[in-house]
Length: 129
Length: 280
Image (spheres, rainbow over the protein chains, first blue to last red):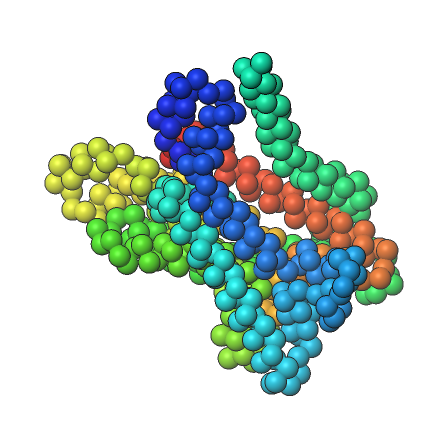
């Protein structure tokens, strides 16, 4: 995203006597702000749906814990843990619904992220993650 | 005074950004170091040539899982690559505006859909209709994950081909399809291969979509419509098991997997050295 900021931006700031950091802060980061937010959202979208790495360490307990240090559960972990055990249609349907919800959330986050990223880099020149 | 302060802030921020960049490398170094430390002792010839032993018996290996992973990747490539590359050609060459934009957007969003959701998709489409877990279902799930990566890389690599090359070919009287097949695609080949390798590296380590499609198998698989073992699945099963010996094998499996992925990524980098700079 930062590479997508035109060099004229940098040169203008440097020409006004800004230091390297001031150039970055004022001319580059501010110019590419929406794209940076988009990039952060992309990362968040990836993390939201991460399954295995979370399942192995989160504890998998079906409660909303008060403490951050207590075991919890994520949507992806529920699906991973219980899908092959789901014997009845209702159970299976419920798990697929969790999947639908997860899908909806990540699609929303990703769609927003793409719009933000494209606003700076353009659809075609966008930086791959 | 303020000038000195500004210069000072400049130096501090330069140091902080460099430190943050270094911080990105650390997790990889730690992971790799830990895997070597824990897993290297369990890697031997048996690990690559033997089947898993029953619970409680030491020894055995992950030969079936390594083979299974390779088969799954081959299946996914066979399904996903033709579609992805042809679609990428369309995106790069089409003179339409709206449809390519929509496809690009959908592909990028699909790229962010959690792999477990794609697993559910493959389960409902393939497993439910075939009434059993199968290598085929796993291949379909992985192919869906590969598709957007291959599609978008192919498109971007074709766009890097200089317009003058295209124009020269057209000026010689070549029809458009011949320009694409004989001039543009060969020029973009290294880049497209990179995209393919990146996609392979990505799916090689996927566990979640295989849990209820490929399902895993402790024996040699016989057919593609039967459950099949995969390295990530085996690592997961062994890692959450209560046996020390299995833990050691899980570490070793993870070490083998990360080495494979690293080699594929490295090959991808080497294949397109200097080409990424042309994007900018």
